[in-house]
Image 1 (spheres, rainbow, N blue to C red):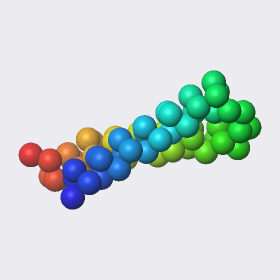
Image 2 (image 1 turned 30 degrees about the horizontal axis):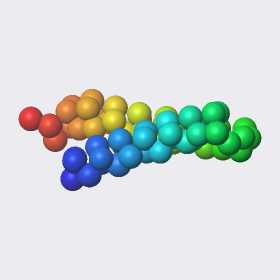
Image 3 (image 1 turned 45 degrees about the horizontal axis):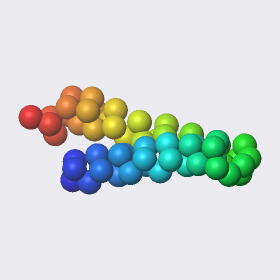
Image 4 (image 1 turned 135 degrees about the horizontal axis):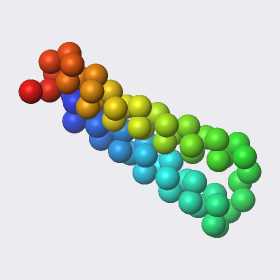
Length: 62
């Protein structure tokens, strides 16, 4: 279960980062795309923080 959550966080971070780079250097999708990809990065970081600190304090990580 923890591995699936971690993997989804990394996938969100990759999509968000690549989306921001593509939006900046190749396409000009506008501010909505920038906010969307930035939100994906924030959600991915929040999930990673939860898997590290949240699951550790609840005893899921040993």
